[in-house]
Length: 100
Image (tube, rainbow, N blue to C red; front, side, top):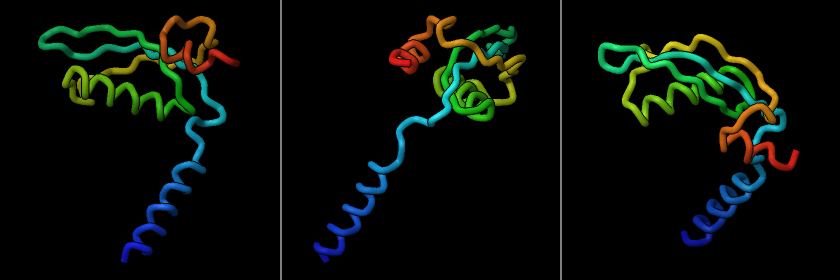
């Protein structure tokens, strides 16, 4: 039993290590939009790093949902633009593209 468990743990560990941590073609995006806070709309503009626009949307929804408790239907994304990483001062973007 111990040997089988050891083999399974090793296989999962090897599979975890062999996956790349970051995508190969990550880009910096600037997202403009608004979200409902009570009876008013709060505008936001954030910079994120992702592989494509679908991942950007998912990150925005999950971020505001977990930090502010806002439902996805109350988040409106007006624009998603690809930006040059040197234009951004967001720590996520700066740290990701530091060596590039």
